[in-house]
Amino acid sequence: VGLTRSEVMRRIRGANTRPERVLGAALWSRGHRYRLRSRNVAGRPDLTFSKCRLAVFVDGCFWHGCPDHYVRPRSREDFWAAKLRENVQRDLRQTRELADAGWTVVRVWEHEVFTHLAVTVRMIERAMRAGCHRPRRAEWRVLSAVPIAAASAFEDRVLVSLADPQREKNVQIRRHTRKW
Ligand SMILES: [Zn+2]
Image (cartoon, rainbow, N blue to C red):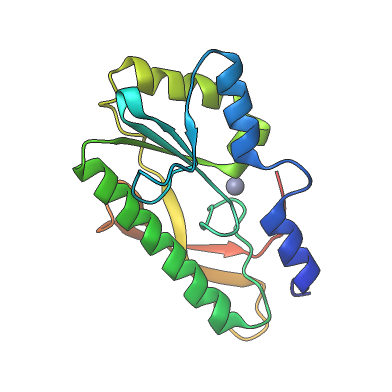
């Protein structure tokens, strides 16, 4: 069963709270001040901490190809495949451009905010304390997903490394629509 438009929209919007707001509120309550989607920083990161040049993006699992939660839509396949590739390539480009300009870039998955908020907050605080010189661990994201055969439950995926866009790997998984 393919995703209907309303299912896709639900994945895009999230249930009721947006993850960047949830993460921002948790950081704010611990005394960290940031700008939300600042126009002055390339790529308009979700949160920017300009004092230590730290940029935080909260990436939606569907839009940005989370290896655990990306779901390949079964309608308008070409459209969604192109969209995914475009988004992931933009992530790679933005991350590199900011890093080249001396920013530390932390990218977290939407699901991490909901399942591991405290851990995520601590990770961001570590990045602040380290003087913002430690980039986030290598992070894989789905660049493409195609069924191995017509109507097959399995799909071939190409994953790309955020830390090193030259690195790609292939995995084969059974299509699932599990959320966190
Ligand atoms: Zn996810």
